[in-house]
View 1: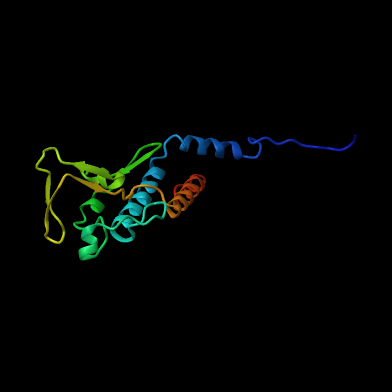
View 2 (view 1 turned 90 degrees about the horizontal axis):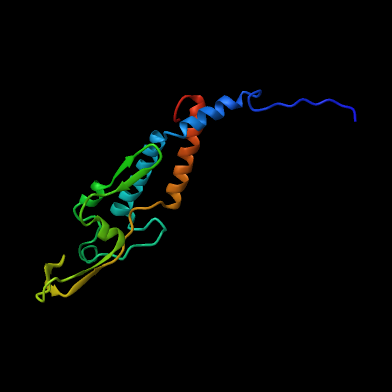
Length: 169
């Protein structure tokens, strides 16, 4: 067989140093995790303050207060929305709230009276009630929606593309 050929490896093509740079940057993704955290915080805040729709696109059960007075279900005082924060690290980001009732709204709960006297509280319309238990439905505000997943993919592409050009774009 006659002919000619030439073989190039990644080092010959100048790509090896670029790949090494990307691999090294993959060890500390704090900047990317911080940006992803902002996307997820904004998504959670929007769910609480505007849409009342979970990350999977399912509408939350409306609260009694929202039925009586209107407005978003988990946004009476704004404390929950303002409490959503992110804590980025080198390879992960944690998004959540430190409020004692945040988990109850995220996961739902059944609150049972500890005594025979029951649970005493006032409804949003001013009616005082005594019950043995209260069921708080799940209203998932933390999570990743389809739109947020797309935003995170775009951020990730921009981050790694930017490494070769000098930072996030």
